[in-house]
Image (cartoon, rainbow, N blue to C red):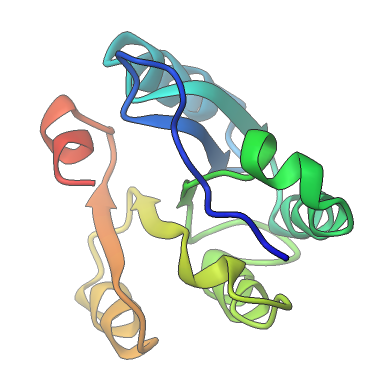
Length: 142
């Protein structure tokens, strides 16, 4: 039976979040912003959508790890090689169980293309759309 993701540590809004961005400098800066705001106790960083999906699938195999390691928020860049952010979201939504319903997805992008924002809304789920850089104000909305 699947347990509910929860936050056990006082002072942190989330126990675990994940960053998915092929730009390592952006990942570093965003991780520091997340940590500095006590947004999450633990931040997982992936430089590609496929590796992030594999990580999540591996966690699903062991229910004991879900409460501790599964992210409650995933920040996804749109423009990445091999698997872009939209492709990641499509695959993420196919994950087994209801785990993908409990996780907040947030596009974190430098794109100013209005079509990207429209496509995000059209994906049928509540996905936040945040323009880089990540800010304290954006984190407060999640």
